[in-house]
Image (tube, rainbow, N blue to C red; front, side):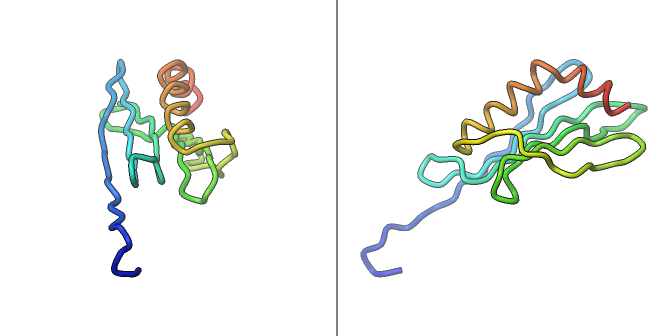
Length: 108
């Protein structure tokens, strides 16, 4: 980077969204106010411990969803969104908030 190049600072933010018997864990990195990397994870309190149910992320450069099951663990990611990272992250949060009970049933 040249002397006149502005410094680019990545900011990471992590926070939970509490649901009934479950929570959404949001992890996002922003640069200049734009989401560059994210994961949105649904975990549920099952049999006295937190179990991962779904993960939405862009770790591999595309917007994927990974299902988890009791018997099979983490499943391969499937493409679930085309578009900007921030919009994909918000869509994942909305999807979980509106469908988390059904997602948890699918884990069982």
